[in-house]
Amino acid sequence: MKSLKAEHNILADGQEQLKILEHGQTGDFALIPFQQKLEQFDLYPLKSSQIEIFQVNIGKMCNQVCKHCHVDAGPDRKEIMTRETMQQCIDVLKVNPQLKVVDITGGAPELNVNFRWFAAEIKKLNRHVIVRCNLTIIVANKKYYYLPEFYKQHNLEVVSSLPFYTQDRTDRQRGNGVFEDSIKALKMLNAVGYGKNDTGLILNLVYNPAGAFLPPSQQSLEREYKQALMERYDIEFNNLFAITNLPISRFLDYLLQSGNYESYMEKLVNAYNPVAAANVMCRNTISIGWDGYLYDCDFNQMLELKVNCSSRHISEFNITQLNRREIVIGQHCYGCTAGAGSSCGGAVA
Image (cartoon, rainbow, N blue to C red; front, side):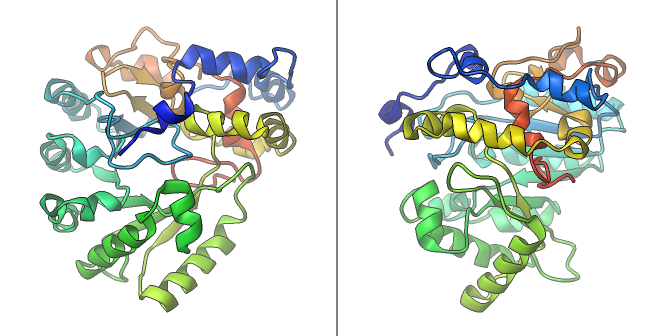
């Protein structure tokens, strides 16, 4: 599979992306600074409340190359978390019971050879574990057919992206054949009990807009998805998360190439919601990069914005310091605070 990075000359460097976010392509585009918006509603400095979600990116390698991907993941990526760093994460969880949820992400996290070991070890600590599965990995190769049973065995919550319930819109965003493979994978998950009532096996789907616009109402969209997927494919799932595309990596590249950057950013600013800002996910989440460095969120991780705290690596994890830290912000934060807000769990307001 050819990388979109090579095709589109994506802005891979975090500092380069930050310059664009601050000044636009020409250097003379200016938006109200995000800090100023927070100050207007007495939310600055934005501080951590109490960390409960431990989100771990275990590698940027992926079997897909999605056009909206803020991780810039793909089959050519070599950044993979080592077992040693995973063990450090496990050691942190052992002594910090307030970290109740572990959110395993990537890339396709299943491509890390230590994924099964890592997930199983975390479950031994009685944590709720989320795995962000792109669905197609399940049917990409026979050696991954075991995944639905593995998820079930360890009662992992599965969160999977399905940009829309039609083939054309999904394939435009994620690649030819992705929709068909996603439907096959969803049927395999349903077959072992995922998404079914009374099984306790949670299957949630994720909607991302296909262009330079905000997601519609999460509740109404969920009803649409449930009706369409049941009527057309006899597929069930639990919840739909509507997530705003942040102007980072491939989606930022798309905005610049299509001439939508300035209008999209203005759209985000005009839709700023102080209620969403007060409930952003970075306040109760810590994000761990594939190399063990700590970030306020997955988006800051991709922009190389480490936490504003002396505890900056998993090897020096200090929950007290991290719970007192100020969140590192930037213009990209408008994406999480527009409209009903956006997080890895969907709308927040």
